[in-house]
Length: 272
Image (cartoon, rainbow, N blue to C red; front, side):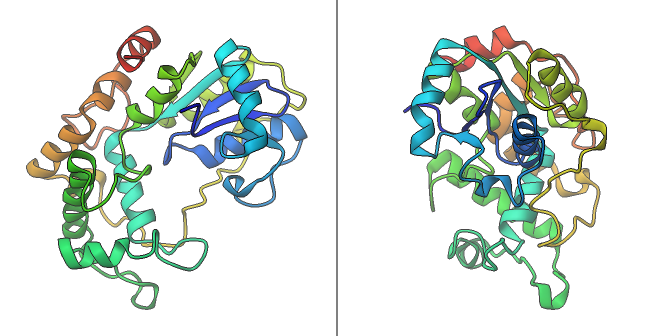
């Protein structure tokens, strides 16, 4: 299977396992800058050179040799399951993508037909009942993850622990796993642990949120989207994420972690 979703700097200073909706655009740009002294001009997901990616055939052998030999500092970044799936909903379900179309073509019409959701459109200012539609989307997300229907689960709402685990099961070892919610602290820890051709000041770099601005804005506090049933569904889908990455399931309004990540526990439990 190799190392899907893995990026590595050309200097091989660091290796990163991408987790969608967890600041991956900013992390990719930080990695790019640390090698080249400038940010990539565009969405870092579109880059074809300047950064090794598992999706690029020429990069695979170098990534695999590095990761299996644990030659570089390896890390990944996680996010509170409540805010992560909300972000996925507003970006991938309600938003218009960079190519001007809906995400995954016929998926949104399928959701409208089978689950009765609304997504609004730019012409009416994306006016729709966000809470009702999100809760119906949750049923769809659960169906894709638990029963793999009406389609396979999408990387943007499949469990973070699933993304993190492939790196371990295929022979990788993490030196750091940190929280999106404490991004600067965690990313600085990575930069302090490696030697890079170029230095950068994390406090003053832009945030590369490529999903911002092409969909509706969230109108309500996070906790308003989750009633008892929604919380039950979230726990069914993301129980392992809450436990391993130390997030608060009981309080959707608390996006911050409530404990420390135990790398030994994660390697033991996700490496099986």
